[in-house]
Length: 402
Image 1 (cartoon, rainbow, N blue to C red):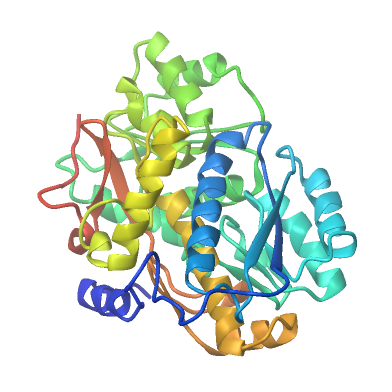
Image 2: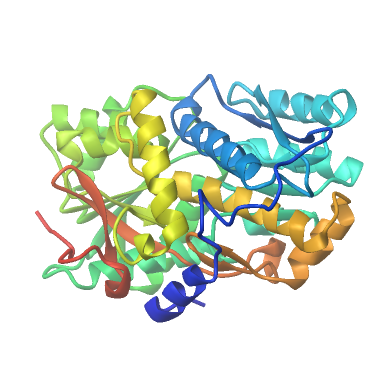
């Protein structure tokens, strides 16, 4: 179920906004810190998007402590480098629970690493809030909660949103090439895109897979050019989309429409050959998203911090918004339950909804997923802008076709 613009603005308005990311507490936090443990891919192929999540988490914890922390106590984020490897993430989450004795868990980046963290959380009865898990039917643990409103069937919802957006094109795609990393979530959604395309009467002219971590996209680009699709649906993760675009540029080919599931947003938006590229989004730096004063303040703070960190694009978009929402969910769960007891927090979240900067989130469908807030964005003039649905489009923005 999607959220209309008026309901979205109304939900945003319910979030306290008197200070940095929320209302001030009457007293500053005291006592032993509440320890939140987690990992991110600070090195390895997932490092680029993980830096976005690191900056977001740091900002959120700083602001949370200015607002009184959790249950009157300051919050400390214990962050470790999982090196983009699920087996390393599993070991580190074991350490966080058993050696570091953290009170709460926040998830890593990426479906594979989150699945590893989820197994550890289940073994110790810990609640896990995460932000980038793309396969709801694998989320079988009832104390895990997702901060990205993909809906319970993203393998259908994401391609459906894309095809609905492309229906506005003067020449909607009749043929599609689906190329994808074998990374679990993007591969899963790419397989879904094949089925949805078939249902929409769009002819598949190429299906091709590569191993996660591949850096040679020349042969893949050549196969795409030979297939000459109207639409390139790319299950790319991080910098894979940029590497494919560069390979396509070298052989002078660009499909009329091209879509990338989870690109590294800054590097892609800065690449001239990415003009017109499409992707999924839940938040961009324009109204109505920025009608929410909490979101507006986060955009300001994030832009300042990301600029200092020399990120290619310091703007807030899907990755930062999903990460921010995960922290909002964790905070709401603790404060709503008035407890650090993992089972009590999980029970509260399953029964309640949480207002986030992407919309009101619920956790009552498959895998504790709920609302579907998938929207489509496009690179236009060096910026990501939402172009569908129209109610969430940037002022004056609409689908551009080469």
